[in-house]
Image (cartoon, rainbow, N blue to C red; front, top):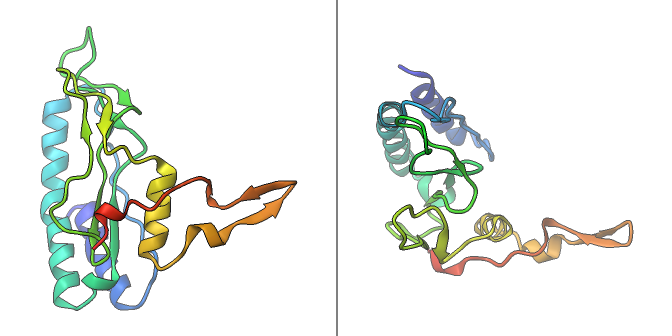
Length: 170
């Protein structure tokens, strides 16, 4: 069993034991070279374990009380000039997914530009503050009520921004 599959199994066991926050880590997703080979292998390493985790959570009645977020801090370009089969970092448009009882299943929210490279988000953009507000809402917290004053400034987990993306909620 590989590392990510083991993490998924442990995540299910932690959820059964009542652990409220569990983080899994998939290393080596940085595909500056050998992109096609590496991403195919990474996807195979993730696909079955994450599907099994979803099934396990559903079978044990934990799905409706679980929020799963999958993503990274940036996306990938479709290719770098001057390299063979490589990509670069892309902070302008990338994909994350939410799953679990708090969100609608099978929904795609947003899209990239219609240009050939598709590197920039175009419609349905979700700022990181909006993502955080939506996660907090799914966890039963109103992000605006978490505001506190410090050093003559209002602060909160979503800074003083963020709107809940209601279209993705169940």
